[in-house]
Length: 218
Image (cartoon, rainbow, N blue to C red; front, side):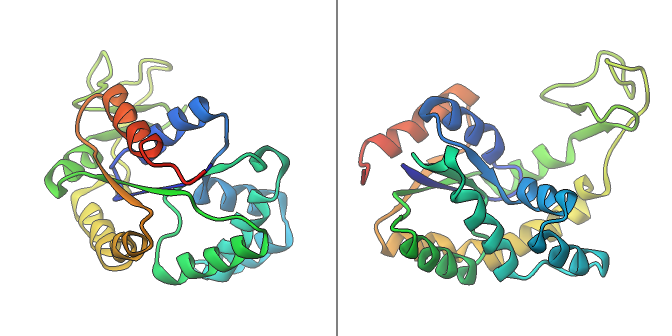
């Protein structure tokens, strides 16, 4: 089973991708993780990507899709995979489709996690990170025992620039412009299913599984 999880930043794709990976025993593939791994390992694609990253530029679609394609070819993805937040735009979707066709593979289901913008901002702006050990917290959902202090090492916790409201609004605007059109793209292919991203983690997982197994193409 080959799945795509779509959703704005803060929709919960990472958490649900992990749950689905455990349930179906297929790897969760995050482009961020792949990009960092390729750069760290100095692969040919990683070296190309580093050139753009060092300039502060976005990594071109063909490099990102190339990394995803290489990952899909690995042994643990032979029985399927979950793409977490990829593709991010129509060009990536089209290149991915052509690449999978050459591999005699296809996407079976696209799950869209829908969360209102106000809730997304609340989730993202509440995140805090420890400066020393990197432990993550949330001022509403998982606050530290002592305000401003890490439970694990006692160091200061802070709000990253990425999690400040003005940055969040910019990230959401990019999502709405570039990624949201994928809903219509996959709906026309009869692959898209919307799932409410509000609720407990277990309930959302249950709803996603229902959307997948209620009509699977496998």
